[in-house]
Each structure stands twice: as C-alpha cells, then as structure tokens.
Image (cartoon, rainbow, N blue to C red):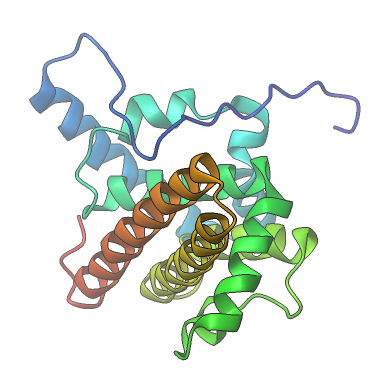
Length: 210
C-alpha cells in the first residue's frame, strides 16, 4: 500500500458548495439518503477495523468528488449531509493543519466554555494534534456514539470560529483588511457548521437523523 499514488484532496473554496449534475433532484436525494444509511450500517456491522480506517481515509486516495456526487446536495441537517460535512471538515483540516491548529489554539484561549474539552484535541494543539482530532471525529461516525462525534465536530467548529474571529480583530487592528475579511468569513462559516452539527446531534439522539 505504501507505494500507491494518491490523488490529492481537492477542497472547495467555500463550505458546502452545490455540485452540478444531471440527475433529477428527487432521485439524487434518495440516492444520498439510501447510500448513507447503507454505508453506516455496513461499517458499524463489520468487525474489520481496517474497513473503518479505510472509510476515514477515503478522501486521501479518492478526493472529495465521489462523496460530493453522493451527498453534497443533501440537507445540512440529514444523515448524508452530516457525513458529507464531516468528511469535508476533515479534508479542510488536513489541507491546512497548521492554520487550523492556530485557529483552534486561539479559540481555546479566548473561549470560556466547555467546547475545547468536548472537541477532545490534545493541548497544546499543533498540526499533528489537529489531524488526529479530525480523524477521531470522522471515525466516530462509524464506531461508538454518532451523536458524540457530531457534538465534537460542533465544539471544534465553535472553538475554531472563536479563534478566527479573534485573529480577525488582530488583523483589523493591524489594518490588514484583506486578512481580517478572510478570517471573518471563515469564522462565520465555522459558526454555521457548528450549528448544523449540533442540530444533527440532537436529531441523532432523538432517532430522527435520516
């Protein structure tokens, strides 16, 4: 396996963009929901730990395109939508682990909530720790309590959003308008992701995430 060539992860420029396609939207959504249920059931029913790790690392080899075709059009607060966003979040983290670790570490310094603990990253949080966290959160979709994995994702996004907002203030004070605008936009997207993950966690606990 070590000598196999891997396609690079292609990360969209913005969170959760719609992918174009020719299928009827109703058919696309049915495929998304059916495939998400089937995949989660298969992996959870398997006693092969390698299968779980292959699913966690799927986009490292295949990129995001296949998952996007299956799940990107599903609602954010649905099973396929949650799986797509967890996979996308991991890809975004792995595309820039140093930058993401900086956001998370700054957020952990300014937040006075339990989000840092809930997210579960090692402290101090550097690139290696943030990559480990991304893998652990996505792995939780297939083993253990899915709601907990979603709550960890929400906590991560809230922490990173707080860090991005604080760094945006620093850039604003330094009169770096472009950097401030970029970080402000990123903070808003992370905060929106946090709300969606938290809503999915509540649906999962109620048995209504589909």
